[in-house]
Length: 113
Image 1: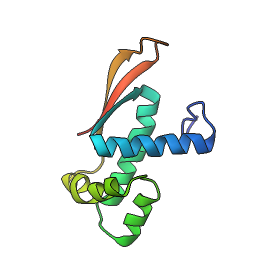
Image 2 (image 1 turned 45 degrees about the horizontal axis):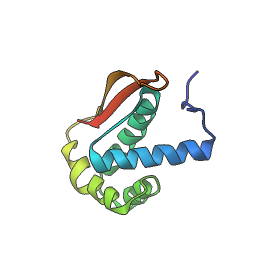
Image 3 (image 1 turned 180 degrees about the horizontal axis):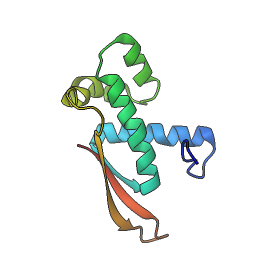
Image 4 (image 1 turned 90 degrees about the vertical axis):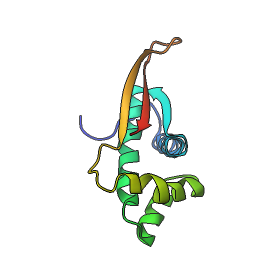
């Protein structure tokens, strides 16, 4: 079925979780999470980087409406997006790292390339 994954959460909870994870990814460069979450975070992070590649007021407002920290948004426009100016997508890498000990959920590391 096409569309977004629901991740077992209500819409508001899912959106808040994805916003927090994307912000954390931009802040730290990589995060460890489940594979399905990593795929969703990757999708949103790539959209944010693509928007940030063009430095305009409208794009800054669009990014700030999703990224939860202002300093991370500034970092996205000044450091992260310029690195990918010659690249059309594929800004993140997902590496599977095996099952989680407690519930055997498939884990992955998502990182900026």
